[in-house]
View 1: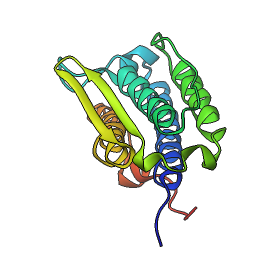
View 2: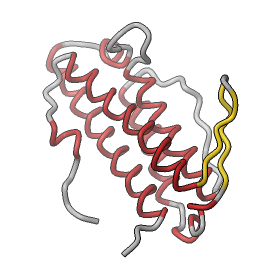
View 3: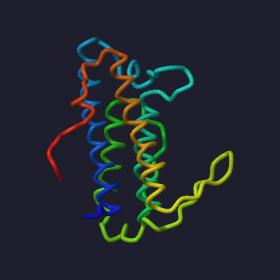
View 4: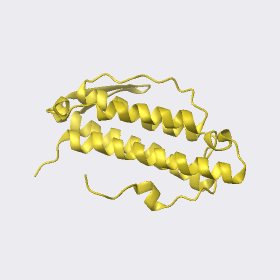
Length: 171
């Protein structure tokens, strides 16, 4: 049995973004418990040359949206990267989730063979759709999800592996 491009992408992005929403909830509870303001967490980063927590959430949102656009040709909403609070980050993820949930499976049919070109500073990267998804989009998406998780762990937020994995019921 083969796995469709839709099944390998959209539900995976949805699950990862839902994990981020739950991580934001835990970060907010931690901040309240410790008497912190949102920006004590949202501006935190693992090291100076990495994006802060807000940037990780923004890039996970953008990666999922842009991947869906490239594979489905369904235009995505654009968001300014101005979030600083838990509520704003949660809203961004909610809006991204709404977009992803609106994508019809049929729009990804044949996308495994679609040519996708990414313009990078060092030049262009060319992929077919399946290589783009499995070699670039998903690793990039999970990098930002796990880095957001790691920032929270580093700050002492009580999250564990099951928080990262999310709900384990089969779709």
